[in-house]
Length: 143
Image (tube, rainbow, N blue to C red; front, side, top):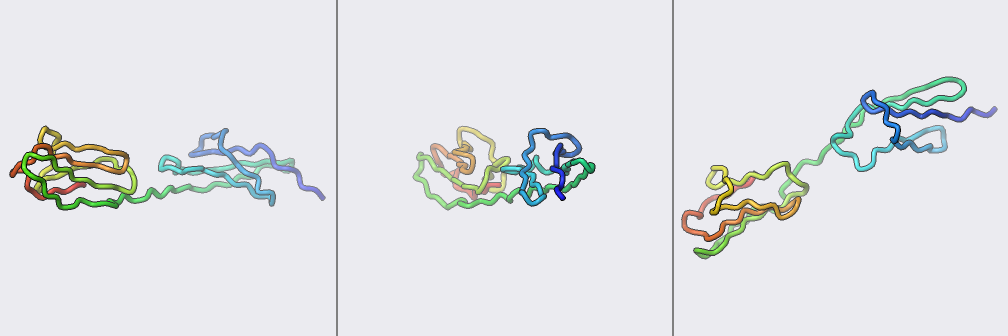
């Protein structure tokens, strides 16, 4: 006896059809739906509907995407800067943060001629202190 081939594989994400979703026939009667390079917005309830001459069948599952926690991989280091020279504090993260806030003696720093926050690349950030003076001696922190 030969089983009828499955057809009409419909895929749904949160109840909406996703016609370009890719399913792979594993050859053993199972199919695989792949979400390549899964991002937070891919988290959803997925459903597949298959059919053959005998009727329809469906299966569903929830996909949860775990976003890695952000970490500082290179933290702030103490620096000594000659007066009237430029001082640069730098951090590096394992992935791009939503925002970076710099603090001087517990007070949030706003960009100015005296303190210039700078994004070097997606994971590297600097606080540039041009023309350093005695009043720039402080405890700096980043969040």
